[in-house]
Image (cartoon, chains in turn cyan, red):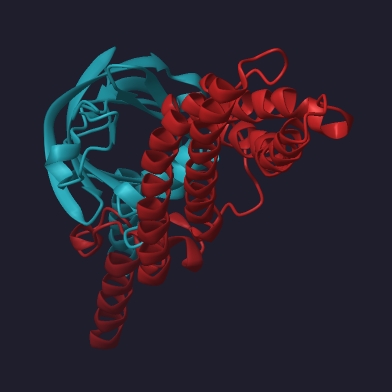
Length: 177
Length: 195
């Protein structure tokens, strides 16, 4: 009887031991729009994220409200929300599945992005690990977002449309919980 | 003994569902609800989307009309007659052209302004920043000047018609019109490079 209870307790410990929770502590996401006449950047620091790791692998979810991106100009931000259908689809959602938490100085991940009512996966997006303070993980990289992948019409100025490539600079710090 | 085994099994099932990483939790996908956003942040608002769309269309029209209106405004400034010491026949002809261009500018200016004023505000109503703030601030300069310039111009025209030298507030018609045109063009250029 005692042996059975001990085995059961050890089994419970092994289940708990392989589970690992991660929380996005801080992040900076900056989109870069390029037009022949000028360049525009908009930054959000309001994204939230969570990660779950176990023996089967890790899954991470990061999301940011579309209206949290600030380009420094009210009119442009409202136009961005309108163009990206940000009131109808108010969140940008990124999901990542990995076999384990990255251990080296760099890693690549497949990013599943839901944005503007559309989904697209960017394969093997490279990231660089820049810190591992307190058992956490800080990394940065560039998400090669293309507005055509999300059926977003390209805004134009003086008859010239912006470039379809709108890369997003991402820097994130994750903490283990 | 059977009861104990049943209890252990029940505990395991409970743990399986509760502990991330266990056999049952592996099937669980993370969702937006797990991130702690407020419900209104995640709520779809098609009415707001429609408002933003209408706003965008109206401001696009405002932008195009604004660019077009700059042409008669510049032409009005360039056709301003010299009342003092000019040939009366030439002055009369120039005045007519100037007057007609001024009326066209005023009508187009008010139409342009109407689209901006009637466009629905977004969720940042009253919290302008960036070049949009400057663009709107310049309206406080060019709007009164655009209203005053034709009034002063009419006064100047009447004084010239009577053979009087331009006097009183009418003598500032040129300056006021210059301020109107200058601030209007500045407001336009600000938005041309800000979309």
